[in-house]
Image (cartoon, rainbow, N blue to C red; front, side):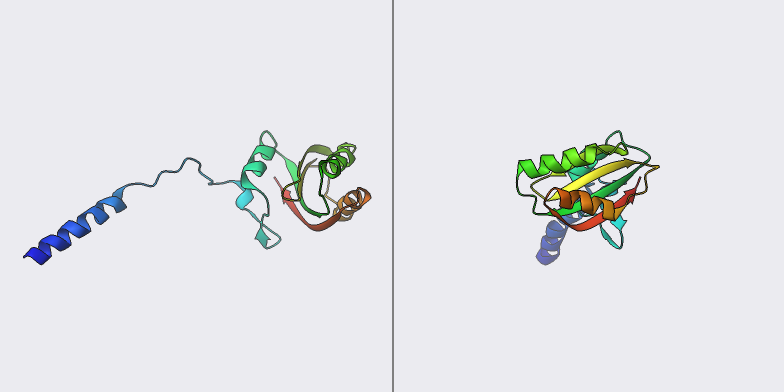
Length: 134
């Protein structure tokens, strides 16, 4: 009888705890940063991506992985180069993670070679480009 009582006392709190719904401060349901692009997960900082996408709709987004971007001067050069393009609606250069997010107007088909040339003209190299149509 004592064993049954011990088992019931031990299992009861565990059963009760499993009935408590999980709470999260931030739901990621439906967020685009969880999207698969070209057969792989979108490689970007989720919070930074969500902030970048605020107020953007009907756009094409290029997420560029850049090698050789080591200083703020490099990052600002890339930013200036892309902002000269009238089809670029918004750009975010993440120096710490070597990522550049570029939002183009929906009418602009993203040209990967054009992006590579612009990055190369600033002295860096592209290691990957992921394109997302939003």
